[in-house]
Amino acid sequence: MNEQNPPPDHLARAEYFQKVQLGILVGCLVILLYLLVALDSANLLLLLMVLIFMALPLTAAFFIVGRKIKYWEKPYQMYSREFSYKPKLKSGTQVPVEVEYQFPTAVNSPAVLNQIHAAADQGLRQAFAMRSAALDYEETRMLLAEVLSPEIERLGIEVFRIHIARIQLPSSQYHSVATLFSVDTAAPGTPKSLATKAN
Picture 1 (tube, one colour):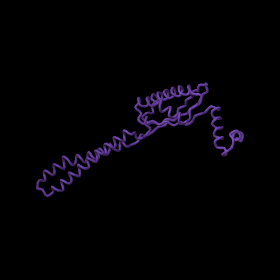
Picture 2 (cartoon, one colour):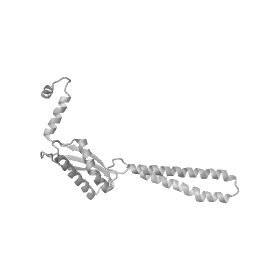
Picture 3 (cartoon, one colour):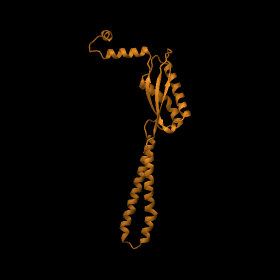
Picture 4 (cartoon, one colour):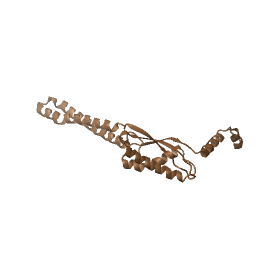
């Protein structure tokens, strides 16, 4: 699953056409040099044929290739959509998760988004059902990236980004994190029991 916009393969094609364009430019310069050297020649018909059948097509090709370079270097116009999930932990506790997906506007169709949503929902349910504590933001994003990669590839979506907007942790887990944070930020040398009591 690729998050870079424009995609790497687009940039690779743009780089290839840049090399082609450079080759055309060199060809045009060689023809121009030949015409300058041959100006003293009396055979004007030959010079005219060289100009018409070689120089002009190469010049046109130079600008056509330039348009292709601009096309492949142009990033996709992106669209974002939020989805909500409610996977349950091993204990049965529900963990609401809000996720924002970013993708090219051409992908914004109900059928495609429903497939992505279904795959993500199934992956989150299976992963959370085997855990006693909820995943954090980065772990959840990495899980969704792993779960959705085959689906994104199958659908031919060239740019896809995942942003975890919100995870509503269970109250017990939130209390544990808050207590740990207060202990870690207490003054050096303060016993943990005193640090907890002070908060």
